[in-house]
Length: 237
Image 1 (cartoon, rainbow, N blue to C red):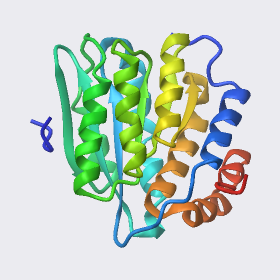
Image 2: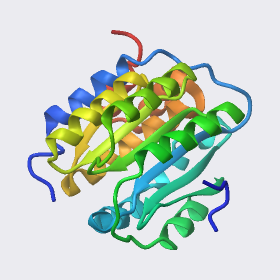
Image 3: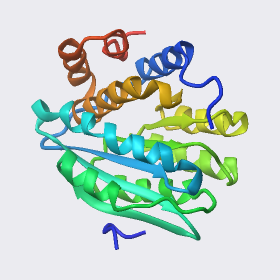
Image 4: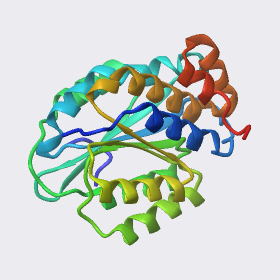
């Protein structure tokens, strides 16, 4: 995978968001490094995901806004679709650049390639300080044990996976939860009705990826809202 870029029952409930918050709060603090933060933003771009891809295009700007005072954020877009197609963009430093990259991608039918996403995140984490991997998807068609092994490796490298699971696939949900747990990340189910919550949570994860607990606390104070206030208690309980 090159560094260059060459539906929803009972999800998004209050309990889902509370569970996500509790998992984030349990994360150990990461140390803020000098310069800009780095976050890998990975999305399933198979055919079933087209409506959600459009929604993600509209809300991803919050990730950059959340880190403006921390020296900024570089985001790498990773997506898979079609037959064995999995690509990564260069590191993008503005919401406009990420939006352009996302708008250039169309969703195409195919099987999931989450293993390749995790392999790429491992490669990047060995080359750079990567604060977090965000993954947005609805299904898993791969060996769960293999995926969980890769997630554990990311955890050892200090790269938590924050999984945003769209849809009611219970089997996928179990594996997504394990990926989050083993990487020391967090899991959240959501649907189209929870776009505002997703926007806020993405901003909070970005602040955490860029600057650790203190940055997340500051972000919560500026933005307000129950979810962000709870997220700002990361590491206390």
